[in-house]
Length: 290
Image 1: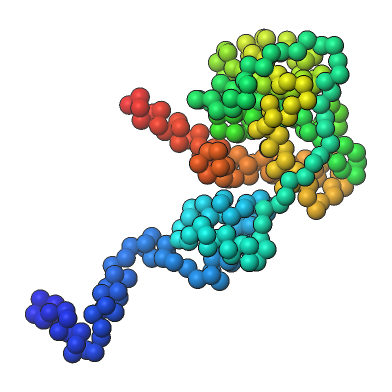
Image 2: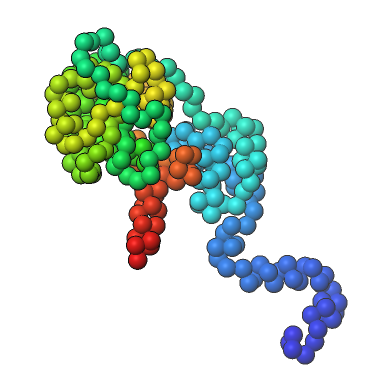
């Protein structure tokens, strides 16, 4: 019919406004993805925010929440997300202080600080960092040692035991090394704890041709990335919880590490998860080599 009569003439005859017709036509021609991304109501946005908030273990403030909504195809502005979360008291958990685990009162040799707070290597398996934290349960304390690849902030090794002996950190490093098989020259950065300074642990690093680096005494900022990791893990796994057994605490920690590596959006990685960031980097390397 459009080939015989002008659109505007038909609109007048049918008593339809020109703008109304063209708006309808745009909606009909929209692709499924475009339709899905149309502006949503406050009620719909709030419902999705609440679902995501529970899904991410109440960790996200409004910047990460905004990024997650966009990833799920929900078109919404940052300021609108901030206002909705503020209005409905939806907020990220606050960080808390926890028990220190570093025993630096020893006479063991200390490695130099090779990192100097430069926490952004250019590729995977160039710079790792490690630390120990503690987890309370009704069966007594558990101690968790972790190893993080600072390229994509992925936790690549961990160990959980009811003690803080050298085997705790050695097992975490062994897991990381066996999984990643790094080339010689990798730097491993830690605090000056006796476990990391021990002859047994240092000999392990030497055997694998890993260079040891250590923070200055009493300076948590020299190992800030893993301190931040511990804070987030404890908020997610321990806040408002009281574990009756070691096994229950271990299960909660393992669940969060999986979430962190594969799904949690990291602001330092352009709001990608550690695994997504590494996959994107690998894809760019393959493309450059092709």
